[in-house]
Image (tube, rainbow, N blue to C red; front, side):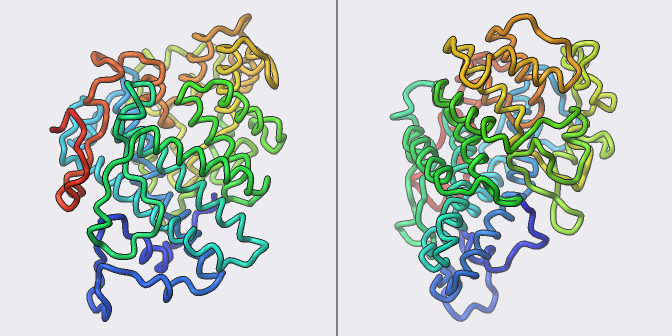
Length: 441
């Protein structure tokens, strides 16, 4: 996804979340509303708002940092250490998050701001010229679905933890919030309802997106995100098949080396969806917290590094205790990579005893061969899960994998209430319909 050089003023105006007020100083009209009939008049206006929604994804409180590294801190069981002085991220790794944690609140706020931007696009899609209308609609739905998937996994109990039909997820807001009214004080939907909306948006997006779309969302990106969603639900056949659609499209290839995938400031052949951070317009908190060049706050343990084999390039991709995955400050943040699709397909095939697309052993060894790791003789579920841990380390999967696999997170069981983020207090202060999560009552 192409990162826009400055956040569009239009998008910022339309991005007010479900309960956020505007901050205009000399507004003639009421400051708690944005008049869409004045803001989105033409196809160009709506398409500009879509660009603003993409730009919102590059917030360091979303995909340029928090979504990934907070999930890794929360899911840590000894692989990493937080050595910084900030108390807020330390609460994540210690599993002692306070209800007023500003990092947890920031991701919620920025995600709903971005979602509101997509809702404005979708509400005005009929103004887009006919030849681009389906694509604009699909891109907005891809962005909205991706963020709702992140929100429900962070602020709700996992799909496999109890009953998703009754467990509370996050509020589903599917129309623009143009004014803060009593109707804005929406309750939380169930986990199942949020997942259903995510899947509906992604299925429609995959059907309508083009195979090629520059740096923006594509058919492959929607299918890849669907593979993630289905995997989290334990729907292994659907996850396998969605991943296979991406691989079988032949639009993506693993880079020649593992380092080549990350030592770049542009998209590679492996990138299914990525955002670009430039020196002009953004923060890359993955670089801030992980990189040795920044003397980052997250250090990787020797025990984890030693999990890689002697010939495995990935085991050498460290600067002492720092991963080199995010060493480029102004570079692409890889959100979906082809290697992940091979591993999802392999896991689905192993669990189901199938060989859709290829054998799980072939998929595993393809990923390993790219890294120079010794080939495996057989593909077991444990081998697939270990390969996933090694290949996708520090990219934001740890807590979600532990929860779906029902594995302990350090001293805590996978379903410990403290492993779910608090609903931000600022939201509950203005919306009494938002029920707080169990650990924070």
